[in-house]
Image 1 (spheres, rainbow, N blue to C red):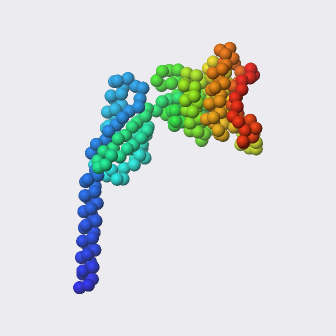
Image 2 (cartoon, rainbow, N blue to C red):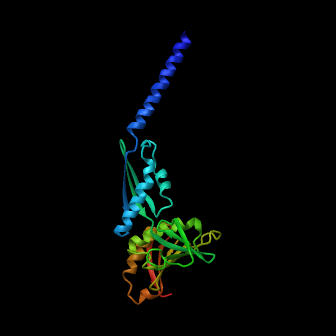
Image 3 (cartoon, rainbow, N blue to C red):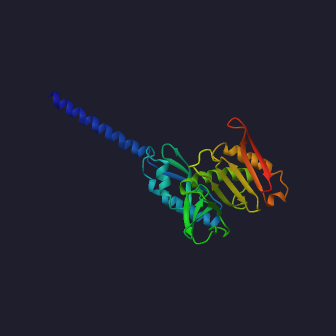
Length: 251
């Protein structure tokens, strides 16, 4: 008899737990998916992209909001021209998703083809020519940048863009000059501007934003003639505790 009471209590507990799970599933089932697009597309293209995004994300309707995560949503739109900028759960049944257009920005020459990457350094497509899919003008070419460093260099390029207020319109290529086998060697990241000037960031992984800021301040002081050639260098002077400096040379 004692064992029967225990079995009954266990069964009641299981039924109660199952009922609780089902109730939570119903209460927190996704009913509304609000989509916002960050894009430069025209109205017609925007509407098409919006409808496609809503359709793709509708697969999450009815699923539990408790277990829904950004990775699942990102995986759903990974083959589109958009990436997840943010995902907010609004209990009990709503998800707000912001999608950002992947802007084709960089190109890497590989075996006679160009691999195109977006502004975050994520691969988009391959092409026989370095022409942007949207406007036909060249993308910024990465030179000497290994695949495993593309995301990092793209992030630095984003910092550069914030200071200089432009990327593809200003920069023809970004070249990386490093050799990890030589201890103490200065690692250089160069922004080769379309006007002819080269901007060089020494030891580019250290105090990167500060060096770019110093370079931009000096860039604004250059004459139009100086901007046609020469090198503008950002570096730290005086060791690890030294100051960030930038200077221009005609070479």
